[in-house]
Length: 422
Ligand code: EPZ
Image 1 (tube, rainbow, N blue to C red):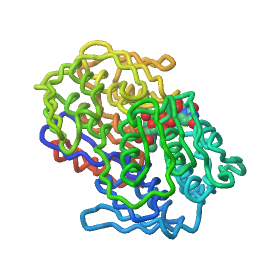
Image 2 (cartoon, rainbow, N blue to C red; image 1 turned 45 degrees about the horizontal axis):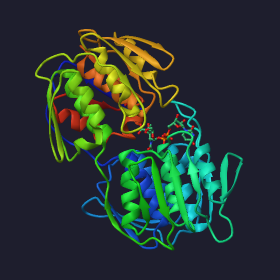
Image 3 (cartoon, protein in one colour; image 1 turned 180 degrees about the vertical axis):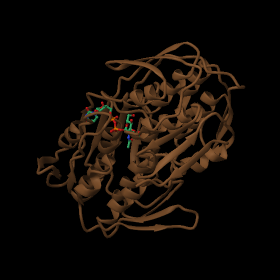
Image 4 (cartoon, rainbow, N blue to C red; image 1 turned 30 degrees about the vertical axis):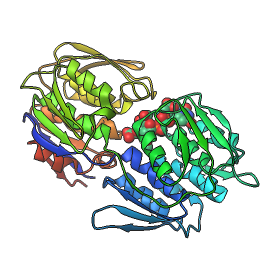
């Protein structure tokens, strides 16, 4: 298995282009199943998860063509299967996002139940309850979700989500756009990726109000047409590169991004002593050679501080002046990076959903192991600032969510290379 070998100590500097958002691209690709025309999606990141989703659509009969500008043309007019098989779903739990579109467009869906994952049990009960509220009949048999819409198709319903769920909101939204009548989704997720999906559906002819608020109102329509859409920038990739500048005392400008997508993160970085300047599509962080100051962080649904930036801020606190507390309220087991960072000399005490981090001048390189996408990114950040060499193993996690990570960090002056291991 490949690993990333990083020799720490370089102060990062320069510019880096931010890719399209994985967590927007995935629901948008799934939504193409709803279209009676041809979709053209731009700014897709070149990530393993995107390839998996395109593979999943392909095995249903969707025709995919890559254009010279790297946009993707998707034609769902000849779909012949409504099954999402286990061998694909087990590699990417976001495959569950085809459930709503298949039910809405074809009245039937068979999707392998996604298992748990390293960061938590991550059930999909709210997805299923939302579909049932719209009249779907759902059985879970042999590890598969077998769903069938009622005669005449899904019906609009009033749905209250007990927990804010990003893909749950997205799945139910996609089911509702072709349902008969009006659907109201309360306690909906407000993440920018949910708004991006809603905007794409609206471009296809859907009638949706309230995207970005906690209440979505959907008027079902007869059919959705083809459309062109460009995926929004990845706010988590943006935040990760900004924290890399923060922990190495450097100065990095992220381009093709949007500061409005990650305001909570930018406020925390300023609190840590970074000098942040922004434009419509760029963010520059200058640490002016200083160590960051420790900050307290509490993750929660958007617009609060994002859970996907939690691991990166544990690293920032690990090398900061002072002690910072990080509270994880979204997932039940999302501090696995802590033990790996302790092996690099970090002073971290995890108690339940709280990590107390006391900053140290520096960390020391060591072989470490990635467990999930964002934890692995945090290990790369730690290695960039550690003395000596670090091997980050199991980087297939990273390749799922960070496009060309070693090239982008090399461009910023990092001593990082991919080593193919056995
Ligand atoms: C999305 O996951 C993201 N993935 C995650 O990003 C992100 O961490 C998460 O939202 C939170 O922002 C994609 O968008 C593809 P949730 P999702 O449903 O939708 C509980 C990354 O690193 N819940 O918002 O799966 C759940 O257990 C990934 O890019 C239920 O109880 O997360 C969790 O505690 C990691 N029942 C909480 O809600 C349900 O039916 C929030 O999960 C659904 C969720």
